[in-house]
Amino acid sequence: MALRHAVLAALLDGEYSGYQLAKAFDVGVANFWHALPQQLYAELAKLEREGLVSGRQVVQETRPNKRLFRVTDAGLAELEQFAAAVSKPSFIRDDLLVKVQAADRIDTGPVIEQLEERAAAAGAKVELFGELLRQMRGEADEEEFLRRGERIGPYLTCLRGLAFEQGHRDWCVRIAGVLRERRTARTRP
Amino acid sequence: MALRHAVLAALLDGEYSGYQLAKAFDVGVANFWHALPQQLYAELAKLEREGLVSGRQVVQETRPNKRLFRVTDAGLAELEQFAAAVSKPSFIRDDLLVKVQAADRIDTGPVIEQLEERAAAAGAKVELFGELLRQMRGEADEEEFLRRGERIGPYLTCLRGLAFEQGHRDWCVRIAGVLRERRTARTRP
DNA sequence: TCTGACTAGTCATTTTCTTGAGTATGCTGC
DNA sequence: GCAGCATACTCAAGAAAATGACTAGTCAGA
Image (cartoon, rainbow over all chains, first blue to last red; front, side, top):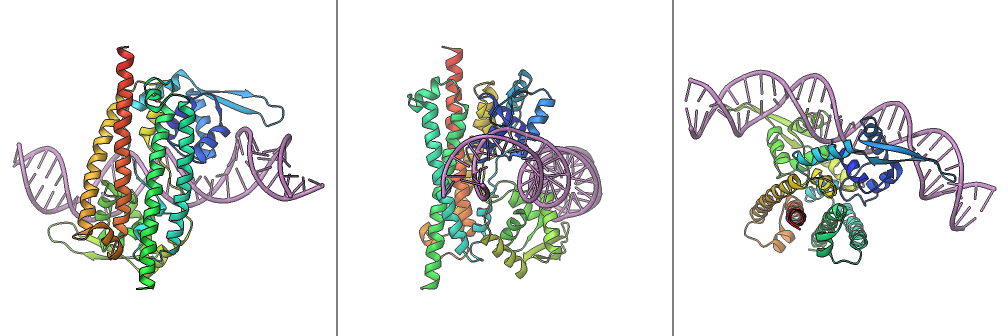
């Protein structure tokens, strides 16, 4: 039941349409959760039925009309309750780790390629998150911003995203190197 | 469909019962995947029907009988295919991040407590993984082990687990500090 | 001697997530 | 002048994961 709370938390930053939310929750700016558009539309509908968000129609001339949602007081109360309840532990769950676990018994060629692609993707996210952080804190330096900034939630989760992607990139680079070396050592002993 | 491959990868280390697997996939030594016992039993049954693993009954005197599973050639081929296919990107998905995202609008007291608990738990995992890595590499130093070791898959995934937990711990400690400072600043301005 | 934890599972149900397809319009680039 | 992408959604179906409840014997400690 955390997707609903993720949606509520995302809507704290202002009004968003399902479509806008979907983009935030998808491409990778999703620094605190991930979900597909269909889930989000469904969740928004459910949240509205339960009165935790309210939507208003915005008529547009040149594009399809859209509905913007904001969190209601009941929604905020729900978030409050959620925050006070125990969290489920977080786990790594990654196809690529499964492949690396099996690396001694299978052909590592494709795995190495995927590690390198991942490293590049993670590097791009590192850049992106760095830029996002810079934008959010504006003029202030980080310490100062975190002490006195008004909206630091997204900044804090983005910090985690950044560290995660850095760790991911470093690991991918290192493991690709290790597996590559073992391959050449095997073929040319 | 990655649980099946996670199970196959786990069984590469030798024969395991569902119960043993469940422990590895649960408590947190699960450095490359996580699953509940029920899922594992179900998956093992399916894998056996499909001929990807084979189980043998082991009669025990003082404890309930058990079934030990090992990967078949077909299972290894399946893993091989899986490793060559594209991986889904990995995403962070963590209740606690959702709570931190909402931190500006809710009472941070419980969140701070949870961050500190998480930091402690992550610290314990860091210790555990460090110890596991030391055991796996034995006498050799890491570079040497990674160059010439026979079974390095679990070592490589454990390295990722270690880095993840370190990152998680550092972030929790830092964010708990930030939120704590803002609380005291607010009550005693 | 009773409680609780450990071994070793099974069964059923519900929730959540993913996949795939479809609608309709407008703008941009080749 | 049309292909392809962006906006803005909806519906249905299926796979995967989580939850809860249950069996049944062993062993250690209070």
